[in-house]
Amino acid sequence: MPVVNPRFGVLSEDFAASPYRYFARLREQAPVHYEPAIDSYFLSRYREVKRVLTDHEAFTTETLQVRAEPVMRGLILAQMTGAEHTAKRKIVVRGFTGQALQDQIRAIHANAVELIAPFLPRGRMDLVNDFGRPLALYVTLDVLGLEKKDWQQVAAWHSGVVEFITSFILTPERRRHCMDCAEQLEAYLVPVIEKRRRDPGVITVLARSAASTASTTAP
Image (cartoon, rainbow, N blue to C red):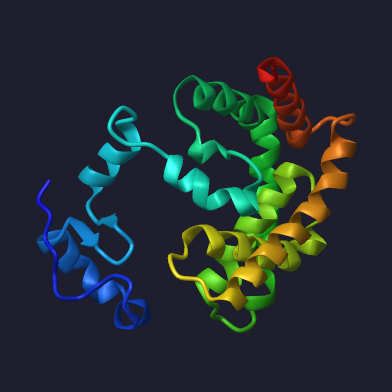
């Protein structure tokens, strides 16, 4: 994979202001772009991205695990590899098959109708902000059995967690904000998880699986 270091940097303010105009140039001239300031590589072509995501012998998620630990308190599915990833993925997939899948399809359709309805008289909408983002949160909350009335607050907390994990440069103020979002999201979810350990649902399956894994791996 050729490594080319173009004159612009993906961490620059210019790139952040309008990244899309650089994507074609990155794919053509720097499919593997190196940023010396943070000793990191950025991939812009499907072939290279696929290799990194599937070649577990050459590449690892350990760096992401370290970055995410302060706000995630442990591994998420995207950070797992090998047998651990396969086992956890099978648990999650069970909630997306058969009758459960059919119920989710109906719920997604209902959510889409609900979100679009207020914009029909206007004849226009922002596809991402007015529909895409809230729909993703609505569907996620439905799957987990959480209250949709809290979707904006959950989205704000989640954004803070994502910012912490994906941002390479965080000011002390932004870092404190992200940590506060993680703590508030945890405080919101812990009582739900404890309740769902006893009641059926996707969170119950995941919670019981996590507890089982912890007990079998504990010294």
